[in-house]
Image (cartoon, rainbow, N blue to C red; front, side, top):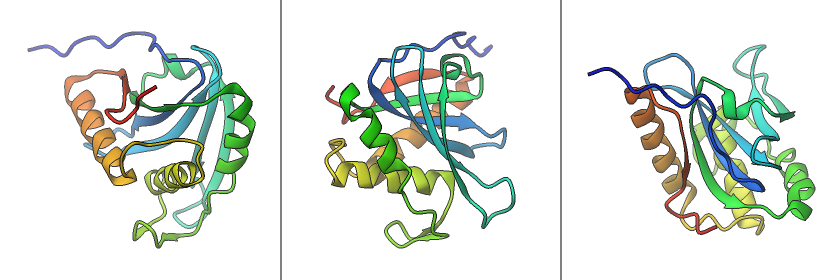
Length: 165
């Protein structure tokens, strides 16, 4: 059975925060980041990279209009709505997520996935979002959706089961 052709452009909701799961090319290893939409086609991409090696992480915040067309994007999991007046504060808060090499909260070495989990915990804990379930529950949902999308050659925008808005 042939894989379905994924849509050329994904439909995002404005003023929403998404977990983005991107294909790394390996079997089931993914890149994790966060994406705050300002319109249905534009937003701010938040992520960390380690181009210089496994212990040299750098935070990046990049305005973009490319996300709906990014072919490596497997899943955009909506985790909440963010009022426009809160965009700046949320962006500022994400810049403060620590880049420590080991997360004592999640008991894992730093990675883009662990950074996203730390960011989600902080946003939920400080009232920017109400995740509706644990960060671990969100992680499990995102991983499942990414594995299904990759196995089917699909790309999709999905509202988290815990997202009520």
